[in-house]
Each structure stands twice: as structure tokens, then as C-alpha cells.
Image (cartoon, rainbow, N blue to C red; front, side, top):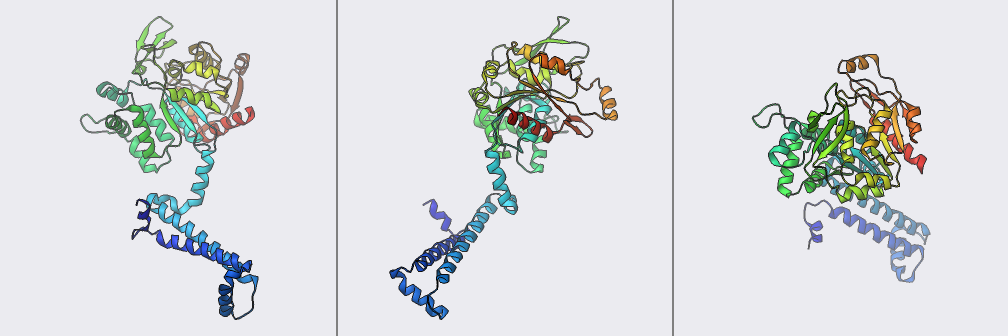
Amino acid sequence: MEKLKWLYPGMRVKRWLALIIMGVFGIAVGVAVLLNLPWMSSVEQQLLDWFGGSYSPFYGTGLVLMGMVCIAVGIRFGLDSVIRAIRPQATSELASEVYKQRNLEKGPHIVVIGGGTGLSTMLRGLKHYTGNITAIVTVTDNGGSSGRIRDELGILPPGDIRNTLIALADTEPLMEKLFQYRFSWGEGLKGHSFGNLFLAAMADITGDFEESIQEFSKVLAVRGKVIPSTLETVQLKARYQDGGEVVGEESIPQPGRAIERIYLSPEYAPALPDALEAIASADLIVLGPGSLFTSVIPNLLVDPIVAALEQATAPRVYVCNVMTQPGETDGFTAGDHVEALLKHGDNRRIVDTVVVNSGPISPWQEEKYAEQKAFPVKVDKARLEAMGLDVVSGDFIDHNHLVRHNSIRLAEALLDILDARK
């Protein structure tokens, strides 16, 4: 009975279905006429009477061509009618939309590991080349809206997950602005992101944070999959070279204090099986870019992600940050970034290639960042190569008011690494 609903009045499908049926009938009659089948002699005679002439194969050919046109028009406008009802904005470029989606489905399986703005920037580029992206995102944020939701509602901090979902979304700009909207007024609302509140509400409705991410993905038509690195409630803990310690991601960056090591509290936090399966079956694995100690490394502390990375057969790439981060990577070169990464990975082989920026940064940008004690990361290529790593350098800067990676150029460089390995 459900299928009969296609025949209900107002569906705007019946006319095109009828045209397709006429087309099939026309092709059948045309083929029979071409083959001069005896049981079609009466039809042939009728055609001769209409056209006032003798038998000609052009009659049959004409019927076949007309039938094909009817079928093509019926399918085209039938699909257009259905899509117009479901997703009106896609009807104007239906062919290109279908072509794009099919090509994205055939794209490489890429796993990205990290969090924060750097990860989102990279994903905005990668999503144009493949729909098979799995983002493994850190869940240690304890500041701002995420920290308040974590403390008051007892769920994982949604901020980094929200940013990653929006970066992978295939949706209207207005929807992106909505989910990134941050309340600047209202008692209890001020400082909260609408997207964070939406995720929190969805987690309460579904009773499961992981399922709330899946539902959020449907709303935003996300290309790929977003997975928290763990579902355990954990805090980030830092030990400094001066022997001091601090708990909480927000408190870790402290100018003048060099970080010795990062820990999870509690120390044991299991990874999701989906994350480990994605790493094992990936065509390419990317760590970073993003805050080294508070966005990238925390994922390596989740058991057993490091073991999965070591055993992975895919190329493992670390995208080094463009600028140092005050209070976190002061004075760090590219080699220092990699050394810290490997140190927290128990010195296992988890990186094959390092992507570094060699493009220029404008003087006014450099001066602006210097005021914040942030400086371009120096590339010590010889040191990286001595570690047994391949170094890929290029101009990956997005030349605007912020010094960040250019999403498209970075994505293309990563795909080139994958092609070279193949």
C-alpha cells in the first residue's frame, strides 16, 4: 500500500510515469516494426495508412527514438519533481550534484586525528575531495561553553566535536552561522554556543552522546564521520620542566613554563572500536594541525590509539603548525613538534611524513603575532630527515588577517602524498 502513494493526487509523479510507460511501449512497437514481425502487421498497416506510403524501416526507427526521448524526459522531470519536494536547492544543478556526490563516495578513506581550529581548517579542504573522512577528536576541553556543559550536565565537552561537524558539513551558510552562534546575552545562556546546546539536548533525548553526534551529522549533511577519541570523562594534566603540575586543558598554556609531559586523568581511557577500525582500514592518516599539547597529543594518550597507529599500513602524516603557540610551544621548531609527538607516542613509529610550511608570512602579520608572542615555526629539515621522516614543504598559508593553513592547498598536498605512496 505504501508504494501506491505515488499515485495519490498532487504527487506530480504520475504524468512522468505515464510518459515513461508510453516511451517503453513506443520502443517495443518500433522494434517490432523494424523486425517486420507477423503479429505486428496490423500495426504496420495502420502506420502506412497514417503516413500514406509503403513500408519503410524509418517508421520503426522513429518510434524507437521517440520512445527513448519520452523515457529520458520522464525520468529527468520525474526525478526533478521528487528532489524539488525533498531538497529544493539541489534541483538547479542536479547533474553536477549527483556527479559530485558519486565522486566523493569513491574518494580515499582518510582518518584525521586532532581537535581545535587547525583540524577544522584542514577538513574544510579535504571534504571537497572525498566523503570518506573519519575525524577522531579530542574531548578534554574544560573551558568556556564546553566546560560549563561538561560540569553542569555531565556529558563530554561538545565544542571540538561541534567545530569538526560544521567543518565537514554540506549545508547552507545560514545553518553554519546558526550552529556557531554564541549567545552574548541572557542569564545562563551568555557565552554558550547554540551548537553546543543542540548537541547537549540531542544527547539527553537519545540518551547517548555518540548517537547525538550521528543525529547532528544528519541535520548538517556531514561528509564523513566524527568520533570522540574516548567516551570516558577525562581531564588533561600537565607536568612542567620546573616540576610543577596543573590539571585542566584551559590552565595548561602558561607563558614562561615549558611543558615536560601531558597525561590523562584518570590515565586509562579506552578508544571507541570505530576509531580503531578506521585507523586500520585507512588509506591515509593525518595528525594535526592544531595545538600540539592540548589538541593533538591528548588523542595519543587514549588506549590503544598509538598501537593502532604503529600497526597501520596507511601513510601517517603529521601536519606541523605554522606558528608557535604562546605558553605551549614557545620557541619550538618543526623538529621539536615531532619530538614531543613521538615522545607521547612511547617513541613508536607513528609518523612517516611531516608537512611543513615554507611560504612567506607578510611583515604586518608577523608583527601582529609577535605582539602575542607567537612566531613562525622554523623548519629544521635535516633534523627531521635524521629521524627517518619524509619532509613535504610548500606555501600552505592562507594569506588573510589570520596566519592559518590554506584548506585547499593543504588538502592537495596530502592527496599528493597518498598518490606518491601508491
